[in-house]
Image (tube, rainbow, N blue to C red; front, side, top):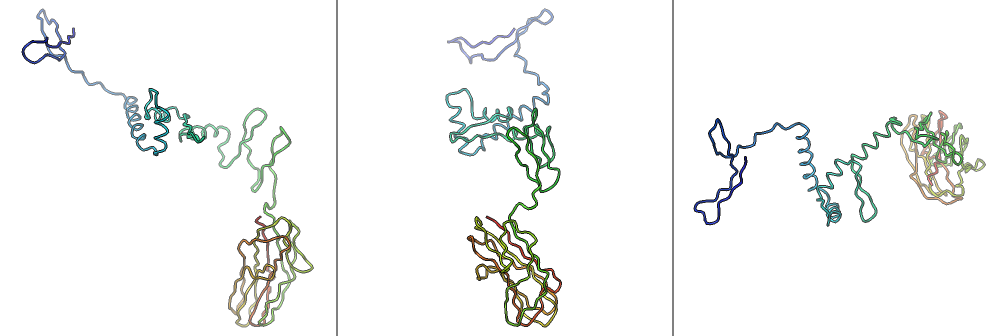
Length: 297
């Protein structure tokens, strides 16, 4: 039997407010204080829940100010606390919060769960998923440097080989030539290896910017044979104006590359390549000179 009693009004002495226990033990009545609760061994699951709840309270304090304001507005007039929203995000995993600007916040747990679900279809890094007739399936390229091209309406896409995705012109020069002392002649003898936009003017040994091109870069790898010590240079010129150059002073065989940064152009502009030497020197002795123009836009 448990009795909760308080002293009656007007009674002398302090009121009695504690719980007491009255029972009979071996025929003898007794009245004593209510025994204290015995400590109960807590399970690990209970401890985990308490820790989880504590973490939610802690994390709620460190939300960004804008997020805290949004959450408080969201729970206004409801039985929820801002902490309860954090608990939803931590336990519901795919719970989300929508902001007034139309954006949506998803917890990291949701991203992890969805990613693991997609791993059932393909766990290959950088693979692509495609909706098949019955299921979503992985579309893994059979070869490197391929692109996924859409098929007919309602049909599956397919991987296609693209030899070079950026328009370009690549030149090779098999001709050995001599640069007179103190001169900088235009390099000629170029042979086209590839020219995707047909901009190379073989008759005049120059590249004419095609229609629709407004940004490009150009480079030339040039070499010089051993000879007298001299100053040498290579130039990339746009409409006769130097846009890229490099130089060296040396007597032995040397190979280097001159490249211009991306430059703005208009259709009809001309790209040409030049070499300079302070003394008469033989260039392209090993026949390894190359040049290229890469279209950037």
